[in-house]
Length: 69
Image (cartoon, rainbow, N blue to C red):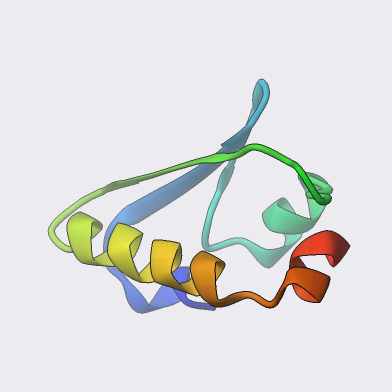
């Protein structure tokens, strides 16, 4: 939901898979789990702000929630 606030294109990559970061279904297909490494990129007029907010969100996720991902 955070990504949808921004006009920039947001891409989330896990391994060879890349999805639209604004797509809930796309995020589900990545099947993120504890320890998953992803790369998030943003391109557009508010890209820097988007990446900063997404990074802050990830840092705030409690450890138990991170494990569920």
